[in-house]
Length: 221
Image 1: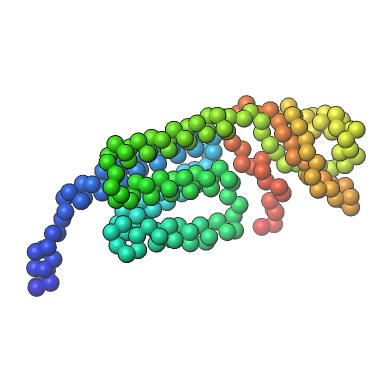
Image 2: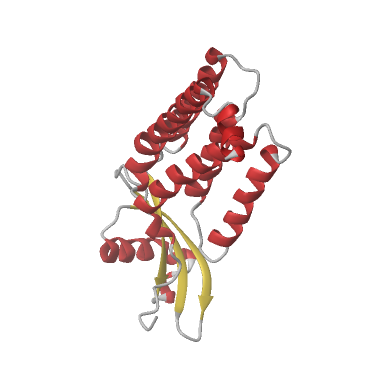
């Protein structure tokens, strides 16, 4: 009974703190959702990363916000993210674009979660500058209309420089692509196989992560 009286005698509900946390939470979530839904998803089309980005950013925000006044502070929250990254991604090849978005959204959540002495205008301006950076990168730096595909090729007689045009014509016929450039990689003369990196004209608005797969999946797995 004395314990309950002690609880209710203290500040049981700080309405101002609750309101501030709620507003900053929904502000951070709105910014993160906008970046993921408007910039990442239309090109990436990966619902698993969509899910990961949203939940991880929310988790990092809450950790930073609630730990900001404790001795753990930001280092512990970022340490938890590092442990998560090692466990989750050490056995899976994560595309560079997805990993960049992941770190970008974590940094954004850290910015919104810290209780730094920033005015509301400064915090909003910082978020808008980050959003503008993503917009510029997606629309200009990643606006290339050239796709890239790795191909295991079985006719190594055509990989010599003097037969480049024959190689290009054969690949265009078999792949149905308008090829821009071909790079020859490793060659296995025992099996008459070589690895080619094929660049082709791509007018699609989506990023095809499957193009970067170097080998076919094992059907026995």
